[in-house]
Length: 414
Ligand SMILES: Nc1ncnc2c1ncn2[C@@H]1O[C@H](COP(=O)(O)OP(=O)(O)O)[C@@H](O)[C@H]1O
Ligand SMILES: [Mg+2]
Image (cartoon, rainbow, N blue to C red; front, side, top):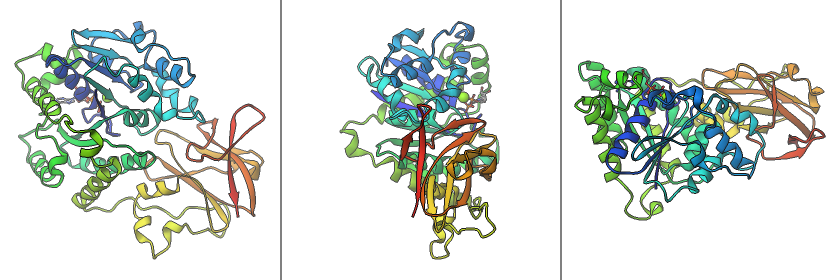
């Protein structure tokens, strides 16, 4: 079974369009296909005319049931779209998934377990991801054999791409996984000089990490979505349909013939290589990590900022090495990733469990939050407070049971 996650943290770059129409084109080519919507906005249902108000159970219910070890059958939530295509729809509940799963062991493997349970029933699974990096996307990545990153051929999309790939590599560094990652030029408007130049650049830099097929900008694709149909039904004679047939052929023809681990490099390596290329391509200043602010007058300097290691201080991605709570000199640096949060605070025994005393600061637009607190040697317990919700630090594995039945994260100052 091929499991292909469509990932890009940028909204509007064509993920759902690719997910729906690639899934339909694979089904048209006689491959039994499952489309899984992991975006709480449930656009796949909208784009395939599945009435949202009649979706009683969604992929959310299945994922939660697996996390509770009382697995529901995936078939209970599936909608038949065409002879070879079924949809596992999303629902708005998915937006609470990350917070509800804080502290649950193996919470990033729920989707993988669900798909393993139906492994023999499908030839292909396509996963549409939300435009944010978080537990939902991480679940998709854990389940995936392939990742497609659709990239709009505009200047700003390149900037987005670089950030996107950095973030993917952060996620993948956390697990040892072999995945085949490829970039797909989407919404390509051949009439504009900018698009042609950018496609040329992408091709020369990404080479075999890029699909030969491009998905052209085609208003029929937009119309098809608003009529709730895949392009193969809405307008089989359109350019959009030809593009997706070609993409499906390319996907099938690059099917691993040898055991997967022998032919693909590790996802981390691939992503790091691609990221480096994207950096080169952009030739523009990356958002620089600011010095980690301290709540005391004398700031502790992060290891990342020492002049002898300038590379570590360069990008947000590198800050990922510091996700969690880490001692930096006589302070603890709290660094975490919540792209959608409006406020992140930390409450612990060092501030009398008062979150308002220790807010984290946002680092640019990357979704990274950080602060540091000077502490005397000892063992400290804390929780993160994200938009008012108390939760365990997802990047710190050291925890203790608290009197409320949840877990406190624990950090030690030496
Ligand atoms: N190749 C394309 N040609 C024309 N319109 C497109 C194309 N791909 C996507 N769109 C339109 O662009 C908008 C955003 O696409 P969508 O697939 O929803 O992106 P995402 O899922 O990444 O947010 C939608 O209105 C969609 O119909
Ligand atoms: Mg979408």
